[in-house]
Length: 120
Image (tube, rainbow, N blue to C red; front, side, top):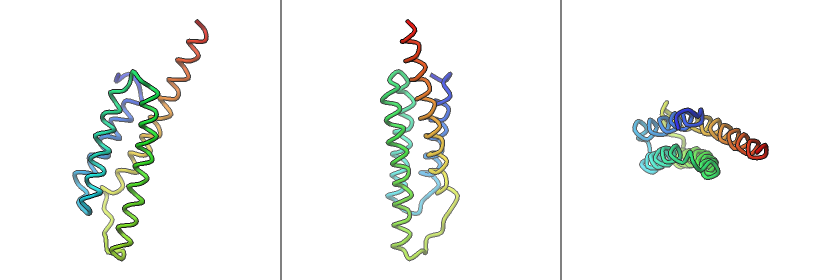
């Protein structure tokens, strides 16, 4: 499980979402959103035997991470730009990049398995 580089990327993405959920207290909804994303990211780590499902969850998590920033922009617009941007708000961006790298690693593993099946 830990031998695969995408597992490391997923664990780092989990930590990034968790840091955002703990330290970012601007909006309760977004705090809960990042906490839910961190739980799903941690669950994705343990799907290493089912690469297709793990890959699909990575794509979904990337999309939900982008939705976080859309919601943040909407809430910032509703408060007339009075919200102060803090460093924990940047953590989901790091998690999105790490999820993208994990996605690429999972695709690489899947391609390798298919090529080995073809050789047999």
